[in-house]
Image 1 (cartoon, helix red, strand yellow):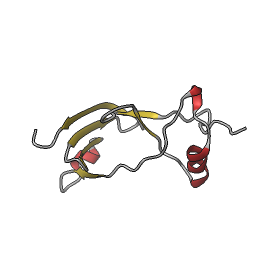
Image 2: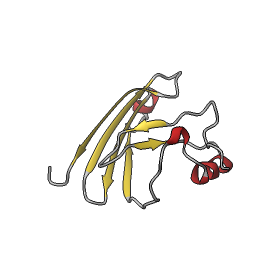
Image 3: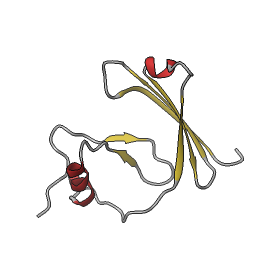
Image 4: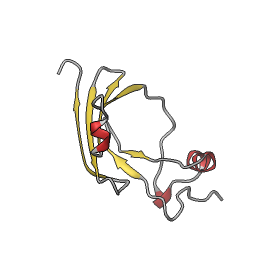
Length: 111
């Protein structure tokens, strides 16, 4: 029987989902963990969907001097294949891995 792919110390980080469902962002530390994620059972009785391809482009912005990064800020614009754009801003405490604040706004093409 397959085992759950989440080690005790690893917890998925939810991110804003565009469209239906909920997106979960997960950073795999190595190839073996990624393989367990791709082929293992989902934790907590969750049921997955068949894989699908989603095309998008993400452009990260900063000042020429790297001022946003130094202050723990990340600014990203995602352009999806339907033309919709999402602006995301994350602020982090320099000593913490997880974002302290996160905001995201999606605009449909022509909006």
